[in-house]
Length: 285
Image (tube, one colour):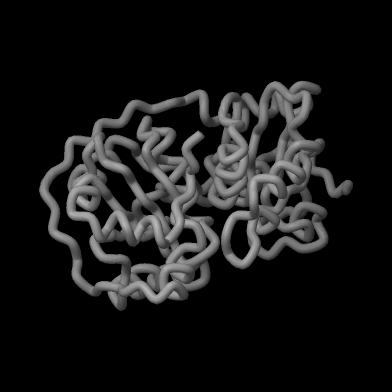
């Protein structure tokens, strides 16, 4: 089974090989929810050689709806995003490496989107740019030049679930709903972003940070021990978080365990669910 992660040393080897580097596309997805311009500013100051920048708000999301539908980070128009990827030189034959600063939250969003668009040959840089720099590898300030790529998307709608379908299925005994937010937000003890606190009734909590140790994904044995009690005997896994971003971190963890069938993302996540009238909210642990 091919890993969805790549180490900094393996990426360095690929970049050092002219033959391998020509078949590689790298995306930098650094972002700050508090300072939305910081990611691109950091990219300009230094990035992995050949990496293109993609912004969470401008590229990986569309603008939120006033009524809260779709959540805080709705998916983008995929025809436009496909065109953007082509402009950045992505070919269908390319291996894609995605990274952010460290914990792979924003890189995970792009990893999932590329999978959703039918591009399976994509991996996340384990440990992100922090691990790259810690290993002593160099950065570049040069914006890469590209020629038009031939990437063509083939969307996989079975990978997502919308709020209407979720309302009908989230309490199904054969389905497990997993909340990737912190236990404080899940329990309703704290809610720094959304209007209402708590979680979708019946959801289990697995904060995405529990996947990490020293900024990298934990060994498979530890991931299996954490996820197996949640997913055993379930026919479907639905993952959500605050706005459909950090939930992808958990989807990567499951993919590392070989669990990819019937794993769906609720993109609207808590930001959508909690904004709608008539939905049930729980604070039970």
